[in-house]
Amino acid sequence: MSAALPESRAMQAASKRVKALRGAVTAERNDAQAILDATSELMREIMDRNELAPEDMVSCIFTATQDLDAEFPAVAARRLGLANVPLLCAREMPVPGSLARVIRVLLHYYADQHVEPKHVYLGEASVLREDLQAAQ
Image (tube, rainbow, N blue to C red; front, side, top):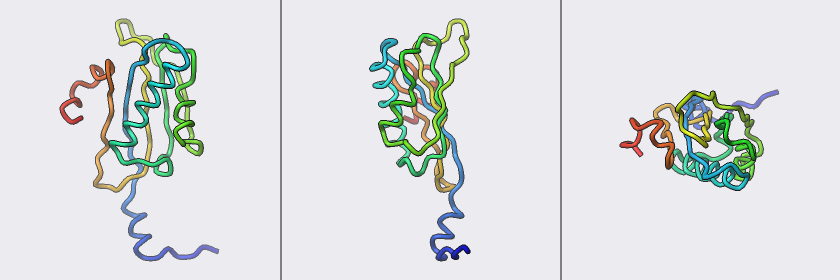
C-alpha cells in the first residue's frame, strides 16, 4: 500500500533528475595520508560548489593512476559521510606522458533539471580540463 505524495512534494520529485560531474586532484605522494587528504579536499570542494549532501548522491567512481596504491580514495569519501553511497575504486589507464599521482572521480547525483554540474579540477590536475578553469 503506497500513500500518494503531497502535490508539492510530487512536483519537487518530478523536477529532479540524475546528473553526473567529474573532478580530479593530485596527491603529493604515494602514502595513505596524502591520498586521503587529496581525496577529502576534492570531495569537499565538489560538495560545496554543487551544494550536495550525501543523500543527494547516487554513486561515486574513483580512479587513481598506477603510482597511487597506498590507500583507496573511497576511504576518504566514507569519512566525509558517504557511508550509504555506493563507491568504487579502479585503476586509471597508464597512458604514456599522462599526469602522475592523479585521483579522479565521476559522481552521480540528483539535482533539479535546470542545475548545471560544476566540475572540479584542483591543483596540478587543473591542466586536465583547462577549458573549465575560467568557470571555477
